[in-house]
Length: 302
Image (cartoon, rainbow, N blue to C red; front, side, top):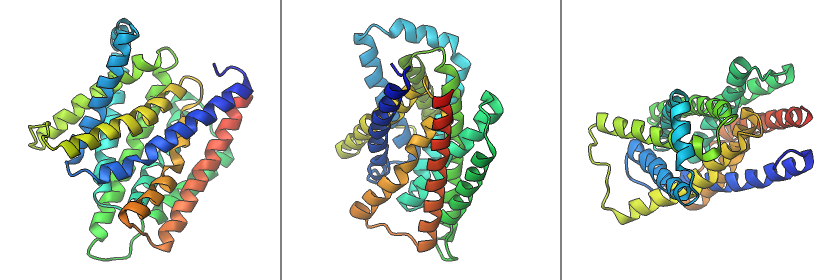
């Protein structure tokens, strides 16, 4: 499907737009929920599993999925764990930070994905790419800056949670790159999302929240919207692309999320940040976008 350079670039562009539009709506939808992060994360993934399982049943893929779960058990469990930590920590950070700051920090994951791919997958980084990584991380520090105030503690905690989410996402993408070399999309994402749901259910129980069900129709409608849009249209599309391009490229596609999410947060939530935060966000986003372009060029030349 993406063997010829021209068709591969076009397909990548179309899929990138679909994924970007889908994930940009996530922060606003999550902000509208009132449930704890573990429950929001659980339903986001579990509803996605049900949708994908239904499609797999009608397309006779269950046998392939079962064999993949057995063959890649350890990797999908580990990937599901990373995905659970990613969503849990990031959604928690959204309760503490403005949308644009939280999404900028969590979207530093291409930086960490690049470093992990360099170390684990032997997808080597050049000197200019290391410079871009330093620029992006410096931008992240400025994006999270807040002058001392009564809310400074919340900003520090929220920033740490976002970075944890970014680190977890990088592990998730790198493992996905490994598994997707030999497994189809559904054979990878369904077991991963399912294991992630299990981990989030356990986290919820450990927090003392034994009832994952909600009788609030508005809240459940938001869970469904989050699952269909950001999860299916965003994460699942990104996982589809992992079979064809390097992990840092896939994780970089989502880097413009802070821009779209920030605009939506201003329109619907009235959120504003300081000029120094805008400077940091600009540095972080620009650094990762250029990093992604250099990786894409290298991938197409390979």
